[in-house]
Length: 323
Ligand code: AMP
Ligand code: MG
Image (cartoon, rainbow, N blue to C red; front, side, top):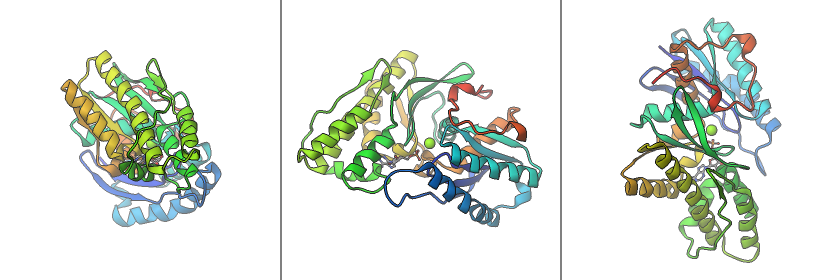
């Protein structure tokens, strides 16, 4: 079976085709803000201008008639972006006469991670621009055991970077700066139960920068504090749930310091650490295609009239019918 997937919940516009075993094609055309952060209307205009050319490049690589199912990211995400994606998916479904499957974006991160690593029943740390969640399967649902009370870690890194005059996306630039950090400056460490928060930390880090602390030390202090929070909550989830695998997904999964902290924690507990290849860890069309394929095989179809977008779609809302 072959599935086509369209991702475009925020800045990333990506289309992918997969079969049960592998990614057959994956093409990206991300939106890059000229200045500042992601503007939902501008991002959606980018998606609507680039969707058709991106899909025709995809159909140069993959035979249209070979496709069995059309999957699209139905939410969560920015409403205007989601609507462009859903419209394109409906059109393809009608034109190719193939069923449509609306996919939860967070679920897709988790499932592509399980597909492309050896993780079976992991505690998932999903860290991206808009989301930061600790997720694990209980029965036939994934549950969120801890999450950010305000902004996602990626968004926090981007905000701090922008404040220090660096362009979007800021995460990789903060990572580079932090490698040359020398002195750790304490920042607010906010964990409430299993939830956590980053926005106060961003403000405090901006104040450090204003007070003349070097960008390297600000970046280093920020990463050490924020990633310690994420590692602590992930470890607690492992302990509570009696699990022994950690799966790191989302755009921030590319960060080597975060990977290292999680790996050390896992080694200490005798747990295993996994993260998929970078191109599948961040937002991508292949994860939507794969999850759509999995859902379709387990009886899911989204009728066109029910294919409305779901900006607040939660991973808990999906019944998981597979192992
Ligand atoms: P996503 O929302 O999953 O597409 O991820 C995008 C986010 O990942 C942005 O906030 C980026 O700044 C962040 N990001 C990408 N690469 C890195 C990195 N190496 N370290 C930290 N954050 C990163
Ligand atoms: Mg994402």
